Amino acid sequence: MKKNQRAAKKRRRMNSKKCPVEIGNEYEVDITETTPNGSGIARINGFLVFVNDTKPGDHIKVMITKTDYLSAEAKIVT
Image (cartoon, rainbow, N blue to C red; front, side, top):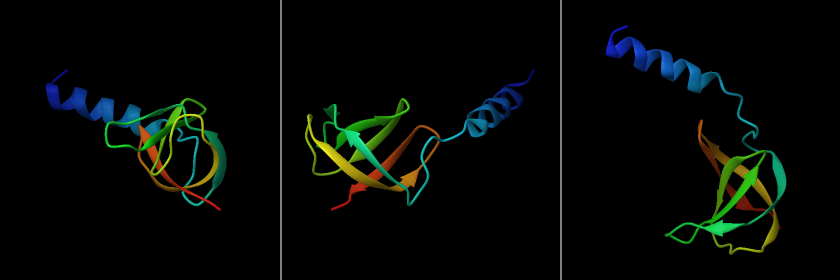
């Protein structure tokens, strides 16, 4: 198998994974850690969700604003 064929096969596999969150949906999450730039990290079914202006130990309600195959970004819902 050629290199570009392997890359295409890998992309198809990664794109076929079902994202456990949807843009616009709200979820309750616990922030477990932070990134070097200060965003909080939560997990929904093992899927990474980054939330600005949070710290470890926060239990918050968030709305998903952006997704890709590895992670999502969310904002706090008041």
